[in-house]
Image (cartoon, rainbow, N blue to C red):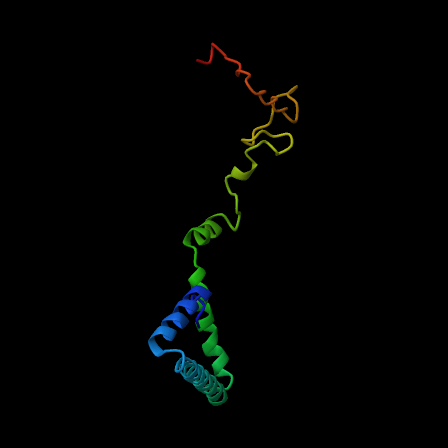
Length: 139
């Protein structure tokens, strides 16, 4: 019920109540609020129990669509469309395997030419202060 109310907000309410009501009336007001909340909770529980008793098995049939509606709170249209179009494949384009971890195939799925090593070695990182090599044909 009060899921979004944190301890900071509760502290501010208590301090404001202390200033507004004063220290002598604050415990009485807090007791009244607690009793009122308890009564409302008891009324809701009683109504739910009475409804369940009167409706019988239809009560569960009524609850199922309501639970489905609650599930729509976390509805992600992008995920639903992706699952529908690609049959649940979370990586239909192979983007997660771009680093060439597909064994004999390259990162794009094409076969590597003969004589090409199965795993290409990464060049060593540059040492501090070292300049990168320049390829004049590439510029």
